[in-house]
Image (cartoon, rainbow, N blue to C red):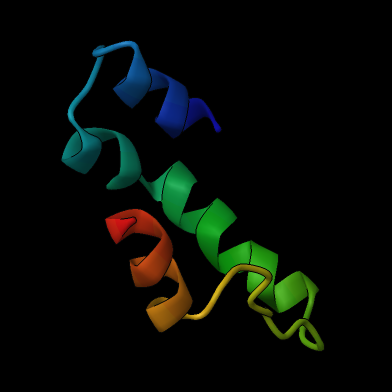
Length: 55
């Protein structure tokens, strides 16, 4: 979240903020702490989305 805040407030570029060792540690630690996690999809399918957006 710290890296995201730095990018949103234009303090650093995305490459600078997300390319730090701290950001890398957090990104790699999260899946390691939740080995059983399987991401799901809770939105419309692509064809449904396209139909809604084009309407």
